[in-house]
Figure 1 (cartoon, helix red, strand yellow):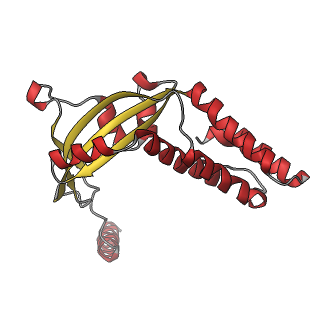
Figure 2 (cartoon, one colour):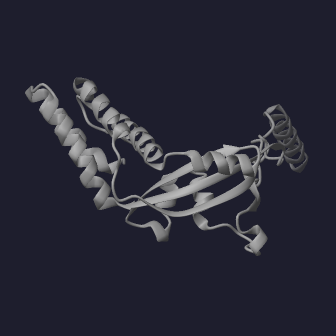
Length: 220
């Protein structure tokens, strides 16, 4: 009996080993926190400032990331970002930009994305309305924006292979503009309602426009 149990145990062990060998190998572990970029130097480097302001790295993830920082609660943020191969040329290009135009261009893109992501029905009935709102926003000079800061950085980007493989270096000049959310919302509401008044009236369109406007700031 004891001999039979020993033989059975050996057979079970052999089957388990064979089963493991037949399974596909486990995937390699994910890369260990290799950053997608590294800031080589920045505006404060020559002054002995080790790290740039928090809004710089946040802005590389998008203006909405800046708005989540404690210093910008209750603010709407636009980052005018100019990229180039050298600091002098990039700074010159940034100086030539019209801030009002860049702010309006960014806001029009954000309005367009907000419309696209609005979880309301019958959006297909008001396509021309939404297109006109986006166009109007792109042409407006918005009041209340102030330049809160500006900075430059030299960034080294890495390839997404987890091995910190160098991809490219670039200079970026960033200008941070902010406005109180209430101030901006009043101006945007004027555009939304103005274009609504110009839209040919049907009950379905009215309902769709009201639904989009009510959900607008949830995704903005």
